[in-house]
Length: 167
Image (cartoon, rainbow, N blue to C red):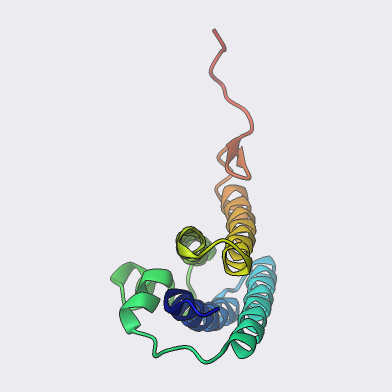
């Protein structure tokens, strides 16, 4: 991995996974619903595994350059944003916590997809593509929980039924 852009992307991804891990543990701590706690702990466990994967890759390929805060902010929504602060307060509503998590996963997936497109063909591109797939799976899990809570006729983001007649 001699490509400096790939090295920088790897460092950014590693830092973002650490922040996501911390965020999911915080959400698990603050969420009162037991199934919500379990889901956030599972997501944190997955983020830890992503972090370990990236650390292994980083150790094998050399040290990364310094990470600019703006690059990390692109990947992980700024927790200082007012809407995310409201969602992150103690006693938060489970749906708000899930919406925060959904945004984290959407942002991470977009970052990995972008890096997959930028990386030269080979292992780096494949790794970023695989990370994007993992984040998509997290996104689907969270969306399912949101659909369940809302009980609006959606399951995995797809309309289960409609009261409209087919023409």
